Length: 180
Image (tube, rainbow, N blue to C red):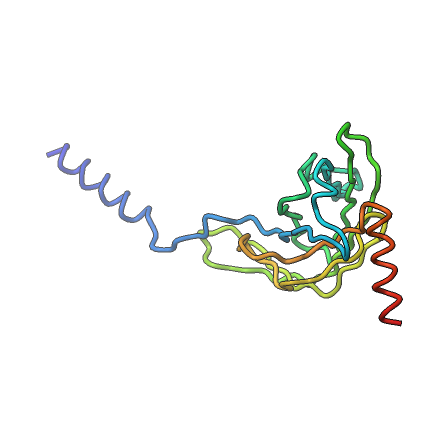
């Protein structure tokens, strides 16, 4: 009889301990960035370069969030939960990992708390208001998708590079002169 009571309590505990709420397995909320060639250039000119990304943490100390990533592929910029502005330093490095250029990206955003259930962790989604950058190796940034969520399949930002050689610079100047 004791065994039957024990088994009943064990089954009841398992049934009551499980919920029908399926929390999202992916709680990573980040902006997806993709490099694009600038006018008169191709990414092939940058193929040996790598990128590192540094962000200041809540204590004001630098924290590396990306280390020596090939610039030919997409990368993620983790956005803060509650800050209205995130600032990232992008370090372009040559084949021997010497920093050759540095740019800063500022993302202004609004933060929207997402509540699924008391059983699930709170997460935030973000609506991008504006993006600015310095222009040492980046030519510009285009916002492709202004809603940052935990869907990491959508590209949020296209980063356009300055041409990496002088012939591409002259082509770029000729194109901008035609528009004037």
